[in-house]
Image (tube, rainbow, N blue to C red; front, side):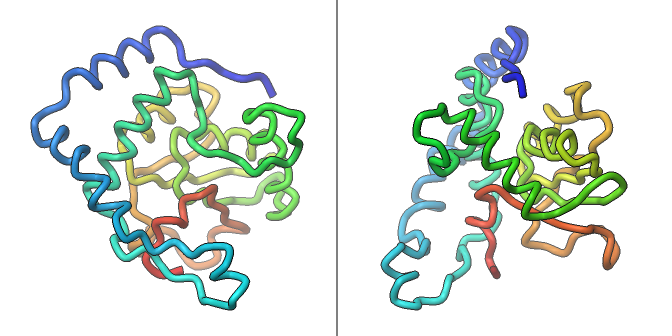
Length: 196
């Protein structure tokens, strides 16, 4: 899969947005660290080894979380990053992007979907992973993300026109009927689930 770089227009827009936040946006972003990461409830590997049950993220979805990802998305655009996650080192001889592709290929095997199936991507970001999953399997992906700016970027990409993206919070009931999806996945988004 060929790496797509953000175009110059996207980078200029990202730079302008980084330099022109409203006072409320600036304060929200500056408050994200204390709101999101102080006394964070993530379990450790030792917890797992000791049988400590996984706990949900107390803060859940919040305006701070939305603002955090809006700014991170702009920074990633400036850095030519399409996907905002660090994959496990599946092949230590290969790049981060190559390991992302390997992880996504494994993910398609794990969810075992194909042509005509519908899949939910929780925390879909700009839709790059959804696009890759759909290309590999022929399925139709529905993505949900809390950050409107990332969903807008997904809507603007002509390569993602056959996919469905919406702004939403997966900590609240979703607007899909029972048994609508054949599978669901997330890539690091469940970090923010209040009830795993």
